[in-house]
Structure formats: structure tokens, C-alpha cells
Image 1 (cartoon, rainbow, N blue to C red):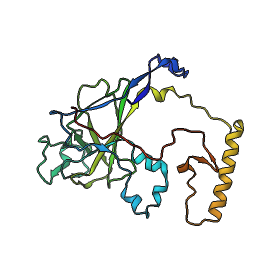
Image 2 (image 1 turned 45 degrees about the vertical axis):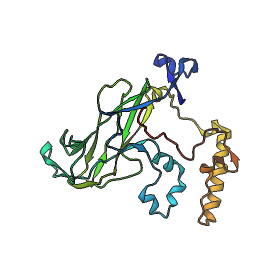
Image 3 (image 1 turned 90 degrees about the vertical axis):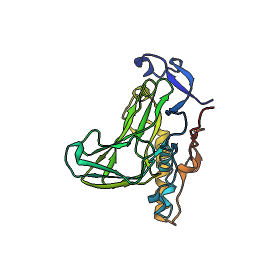
Image 4 (image 1 turned 30 degrees about the vertical axis):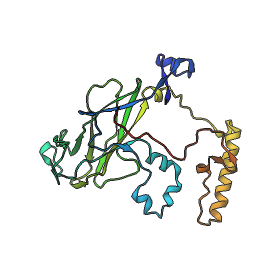
Length: 265
């Protein structure tokens, strides 16, 4: 069973960080479709691979924060190929969408619903999540598409009883094409009130001597490494180390292992 801490107290009490105000619940992310079968959007755990990272001779994969972000969620893929052209006008009619092949969803899911150069994707899924959680919906992490930008959205999927769309905004007139099987967007759950529980404070590094010393040692080691660069990465962060000492952390992540959506028995 996968579990999480879920706030179960008034917001002002949660901000005090009292764990007695939290309860353990079982996590779930249920994806409802009309017939209970897999979505035509072929929802899968996000993959670590990005073409532009391959094009660096795989050097970019030395950046663990990028790799984790690449895998952080589930990806919805285009069920068919289509082209969208925006002429720069403000109306719905100024965005033209053409399917390259018959779209098996029978719903013409790519539409010009909001006008103003906004491409909207209507899905065949209704998502329900653990009470107190929302769904963060965004474009594929660390990936860009020419002249169009995915719009981030946060949806309260623990109570919402209808489908959510996903929208992308043209940043200038032009034409883009999505191929069948190409990633359209990704999503992941977040605890709705969690971000508001953080007290954010500026502090002098001198107020934390241990952190200051660790930072000094890292800076010196990094400087020495770059001065005598041999083409190799130090990989302190990948190894979960503070220079030569293991960090005091038990859940350091070097990869994510998300569950693949399955049809309920």
C-alpha cells in the first residue's frame, strides 16, 4: 500500500508543522474512461529520455535533477496525427486544425475552444485522486515545441466530477504538427494545502556553520575540479554525497518507479 501524510487540521494549525494534525491515507489515482479500458491517449509513466539530451552525447544525463523531472508524472500521448495553424487573429476561426488520419476518439479532441491562438485538447479521461490532493497538469518536462507553449494547470481532482481539458498557447503565428504517439502533456498529484504550510525565511549563511562549511568544501572541490578538468563529472549529487561524506538522507532518488496504469479487474 502506498501512503502519504494528508493534512487533517485547520490551515493555521498545519502551518505549525504538528504531525499530530496529519493522518495517513492510501494513495490512489483512478483514471475513468467510458468503457473502463485504456485511454486512447496511451497514458504511461514519463520516460527519462529526451532527444536534446541525447544530442549532447548523453552528457546532459549527468544532471540528476533534470532526469528526475523528466520522469515526474504520467504522460498522455496523441492518439492521431494532426496539424494546427494559427494566423495570429483573436477568433476561434483563426486557428485551423486538420487531422492527418481519422481520429478514433470520434470527438475531434484537438479544438480551438478558447480562441486567441489557444489549442485545446479534450481528453477521454476523468481522473479522481486521494482526498486532499490535486492534479498538476503541464507539458512534457524539459521539452520544447516550436512556436507553441503548454499551459500549466492545477485541478482539484479529488472532488471534480467531469473531464479536464489541456491547453497550449501559440506564441506567434505559424503551423505545428503533432504525430501519433507524440507526448501531449503530463500530470502528477500534489497535496493541495502543502505548499501553504511552508514558512519562508531569508537567513545568513553564517547562522548555520555546518552548512557554511559544507558549502565551502564543495566550492573548493568544485573549483579544483574545474581547474584540472578531465572531462568527467564529479557526481556528488548523483551519489548523494557532500563532497566526500554521505549526506544524511535515506530517500535520495536517482530514478523514479511510477506505476503503469492498469485496467481494474
